[in-house]
Amino acid sequence: MTASPSLLVSFEIPNLWAKAISKPHGRILDQLGVHHVVHPEFEMGRRVAHLVRRAMLDYIAFEDDYAMVKTVGPAKIVGRRLGDTGIRSKHRITVVAVHRRGTGFTYATADTIVQAGDTIIVSCCTSDAECCSMLR
Image 1 (spheres, rainbow, N blue to C red):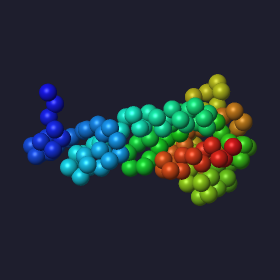
Image 2: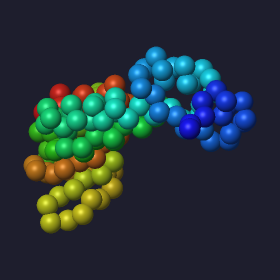
Image 3: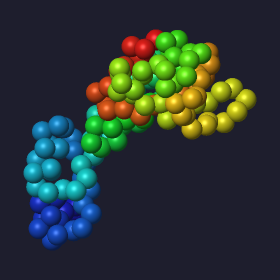
Image 4: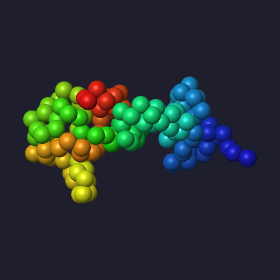
């Protein structure tokens, strides 16, 4: 038998997690005072949609509208210093790391130059994640 979230909230459980089966259900759980509301079916559906469209190699959404995206470095930034591309100010995307064949991931800086075929990890708001595919 599972306890209802409202009962657990009334017991002042310090770190309460609950699974929402829909957006309205998630809002109700938030209103009840559940600390962490997860939407696994919705989140997995969004991730699979990004992967199927091949816009991204991997996609992880975090709470508070934040995502990390693994993708191929777009042609618009290849051969240029990241600091000179304006990618952060124009598209609100921050390149966090770069992976070049034969090497591991390295942290990106303003002086990092992305080469053709490099894989990049970017951080952004989930609403801006689509910009990764628009950069191509």
